[in-house]
Length: 232
Image (cartoon, rainbow, N blue to C red; front, side, top):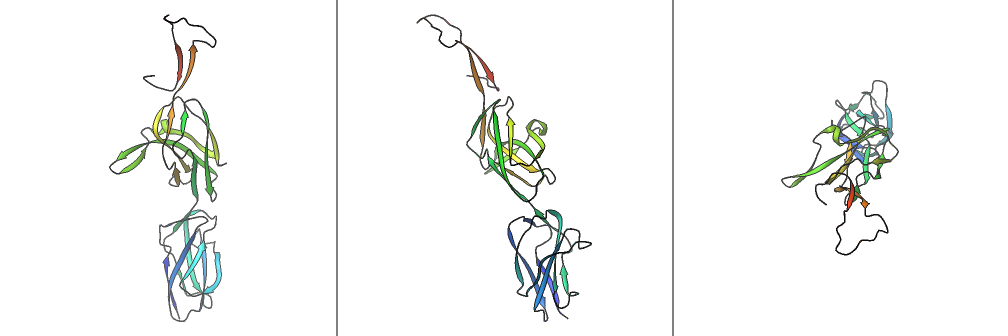
């Protein structure tokens, strides 16, 4: 009787939907072909075929399906003797991919504007959470921090349509980045590749259009500021 040892994936690894990864195993004895299955419940009730028979080459490239789970496991078995098998003792994770598209760095947005935040999703993500953070320099590394969680939240539990229209509040800041996370799995996130800025807006109240001022006269200039700024 032969023997099979599963090498990859390893417990705790993160495999993303749509990407190709090698399932790797070792065998002893005469095993011409193997079957490969995956399960999201420890093979209690679910055993989904990846391939029903493939030559025993020790490796098979698997394009990960949209079967998101934190409790995924692989099993490799001998086609001619299914009792000869290797099964993961601890699970790996199948996760989606979120890719933020805009703002992605260099944009200048203004307080009280309406702007679209957009992103791309691979895999099923029903809802997302949106927030923004400020980048600080720590040594040679740029770190995105959120000082007060509620202050930096844009919205939670947003239906994942790939776009969200943000009513920007009366905020001003530089070196900001948007972060998007899967509502179900908050560790699955993406953020702007580079920083953007929020600047104030100004509305001139006086002088009004078409007024005539005399050279040398003293006149009052008045304006309204949207957003916080100490000097103009």
